[in-house]
Length: 337
Image 1 (cartoon, one colour):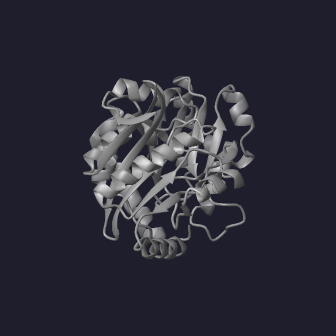
Image 2 (cartoon, helix red, strand yellow):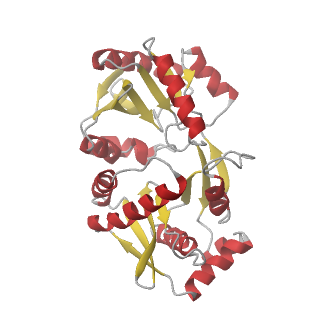
């Protein structure tokens, strides 16, 4: 068994798209986006007698508190073959040593269970002080007919979709890079209301530019009275559409534009013959103080079910890791996550 870097996009994408847990976070383009943001990327393939049987997209993060490696929604492995994970971790340790990383963070696309937590603990991993991308998600099977999807929604959600139409809200889909500014400006307004750390316009534009060129992303905009009042960046990868980033103006609180926007995004995903609409992160049960509590109620109104991935796992490689863990744990509490 050997591990080596993959430089062929076609080989990489064929494997990731064939894996049931394949995600845009392990896609070729996620690596390209990270490179565009100035990060170093490693696309690792696990080969057995020349046959590719696992992949791992690894990103080197340079933060003020130190350097570390992350693997979001990966690696993509046959988890019954534990030796594959052990060999991969050994290889990652070599990269980390060379890159002077304090720790390695992995958020695998496997369920949160005592068995999986025990597996990583046995390999020396700690439960991370902070999450890595969405870990508790809400998924909707969009294969039923439109009428059935509407019928399984919460009554209020269905009503608000129709109200938005009556109110004259219009939904547009765009691939123009400059239109990302609408999302960015609406996010800035949300930051003023909810006090969270925003993403830069450059971040949004580079992500959109990389993914939209392969038709893997689209921006949905809601217009009311000639103003853009809601925006959502939807990712399309494999059989899944992901409600990745979104924001809504508070100027018209009685106009339910975001409900119609999501419904139109779901219909767009159906036209692509996709099977799942991923609403992304939600709050844990009975956590009314959680920052996503209100958003969670909104997402669940469309119907669907929860899927919880294993929490991010850290492999400490330096005594400074504990300081990092404490900083992140404090930030998590402050941000109500």
